Length: 178
Image (cartoon, rainbow, N blue to C red):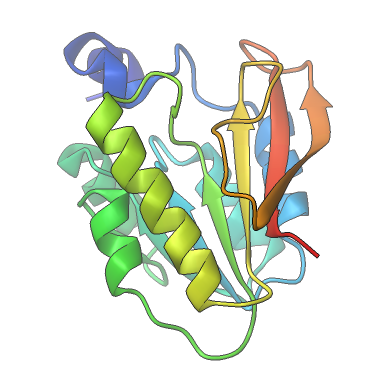
């Protein structure tokens, strides 16, 4: 099953009309520099996964993709990665890492997710970052604003704007406030 099939069958959970371009994937992977562990949320067909694995071979890689068919493909393509075909919030609530920084790299379509799923996922991301000091979130969005509202103890920063993507996308990072 390809991305178009997933978009037709589950548009609120897919959120993309085309896979992320190599330029967006590289911008996301660049924003993950310094990670000891990488957790990719909403991996889809894997364009960001491929670049993360190539640019960060020293980091452990956990991949979360809700669609089982896509998760199976990702598992075969990336045997060193732990791949989960479950909601991101469930996986994040269970993960525990050592003291090295964890970077959450997300392609989740926050603006189109159903309200309850969006709230649960947002809550789990913020709780995960609180449990792992020094860690951060990398998220892209097609909107000209931050991907979602954060709590006061976090700050968003747009790090890149990638025109060579369909549609163009901003790459944002979310860190604990100083």
